[in-house]
Amino acid sequence: MKESNIKQEKKTLILGAGDTGHIIARKIIKEQAQAFRLLGFLDDSPEKQDISLAGIPVIGSLADLPKLIQLYDIELVIVAITNMDKNDFMKIEVLCKQSNVALRRVPCIEDLLLKSQPLINFADIPEDSLLNRAPVELDDAGIRQQLYRKTVLITGAGGSIGSEICRQLLKYEPEKLVLLGHGENSIYLIEQELRELTENTILVPIIADIKNGQQMHETVEEYMPNVIYHAAAHKHVTLMEQNPHEAIRNNVIGTKNISAAADKFGVQSFVMISSDKAVNSTGVMGASKRMCEMVVQEFAQKSNTKFSAVRFGNVLGSRGSVVPMFKKQIAKGGPVTVTDSRMTRFFMTIPEAASLVLQAGTFSKGGEIFVLDMGKEVKILELAQNIITLSGYSLDDIEIKFTGLRPGEKLYEELLLENELEPKQIYPKIYVGKTKDVNFDRLYEILENCDKWTKVKLREEMIALANSNQTVQKI
Image 1: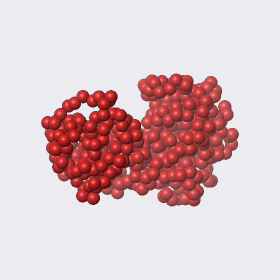
Image 2: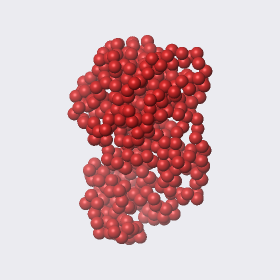
Image 3: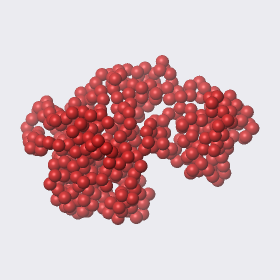
Image 4: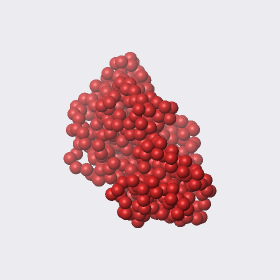
C-alpha cells in the first residue's frame, strides 16, 4: 500500500453517503483538509445519486469503484457503510490490494464510539455526533467560572468516568487537580496522561481508600479543594450481590467519609456519581447507590457545602459495559450472551457522562439528583444483533444465547421517580429532582449494624430502605 504522507493531500473516496459517511467527510474538511482530498462518495442508493454532502458530490455507485480508482489515482478508500455484507467488503479489500490503495473501514457505530485509536488516520469522530439524540450543550462559561484556578479533587480518578472527568477539567484551567484512587497503576496512568496535556495545572496523585475516614479528612484538610467529584465506587452488579458488606463499606461508608470531610473543611461543591440502578433497586449495588444518594442528601440539609448527585444509565466503553463484551464474544465466534430478550437499557458515552457531572456542579443548590435525558431505551437483544451484522456476520453465523437474569439484575432501568421529578428541565436535556421523606435514622442504623448481620439480612435491609416511598416515573 502507498505510504501515508500528511504533507500531501491523499486522494480519497468514501463508500456510503449515509450519516456515517457524512460525519467522516465533515470531520476531514474541518480538521484535516490539508491531509485528505475528498473526491466523492459512492453509494448504491438511486436517490443519493447526483447529490452532495458537506460539499462533496456522490459520483457513482460501488460498481464504479475500479474505474474511479484508475481515473482519479485514488490513494485511500474509506468504507462508511456500516451494514456492508462480509463478502462485499472482501471484494473491495481484494480490489484495493491489487490497486495498491489504502483501505479503512468503519465497522459499526460502536467502534466509532469506543475505539481509542483513530480508525482512518485522523482524530476520532465526535461521539455526540453519533448519538440517537441531540447532545447536551454545556454552559462552558458557568463551569469555567466555578473551576478556573481552583483546586479540584476527584475520587476514583483512575476509573472510566473519573479519568474522563480529569481530562475535561483541564479545559477549564484549574489551579490543581488532586487525583485520588485506590489502585496505584490506574492513578499513575492518568497522571502521566494528564502531564502531557497541561503545563498550567498542578497534578497531585494520591493513593488512598475512601473507606478510611482519617485518610479522607487528612487529604481534604491538606489540599482544601473547592470542588469534589466523587466517582469512586464498586459498580459490578453480580459481584456486589455476593459481597453486600463490601458494597456498604466502600460505596456507602466511603461516600459518608468523603462527604464528612467536605462538610468539615468547607468544600464549596460536592458531586457524587450515582446510577439508574438506584431506582426501584432489585440488588445490592443499586441499593447501595440509593443509600449513597441518601447520605449526600442528608449532608445537604445541614451543610454549607452544595451536595448533589448525578444519576447515569449505562456508559458505553466503561469497564464491564456490554458492547466490548459482545465484540469479544463475536471475535471468538460466539455465542453472544444476552440475559433476556426483553431486557432494555439506557446508554450514554463516557465524555457525555463526565460532562454532566461538571454541569451539575454549577446548578446545585444542595440535595438534588441530576439526570440526563438519554432518549429511548435500547433493547439489548437488538443491540447484540446489530453488532453481529455490523461486524460483517449474519445472525446465522453467530449464535445468541439467553442466560437468564442474574441475581440483582433488572429487565429495565428507570431514571427518576414520580416524587423526585420536576416537570421541567432546568437545562436542555437535564432534569433535576429532590427526594423527600428520606428515613435518615434508618440509614444510619443500617450502617451501624451492618457488620453484625448476615449477607441475607443485610441485603434485605438495604433493598427495603432503598425502595421505601418509591414510585416509578419513566422520563
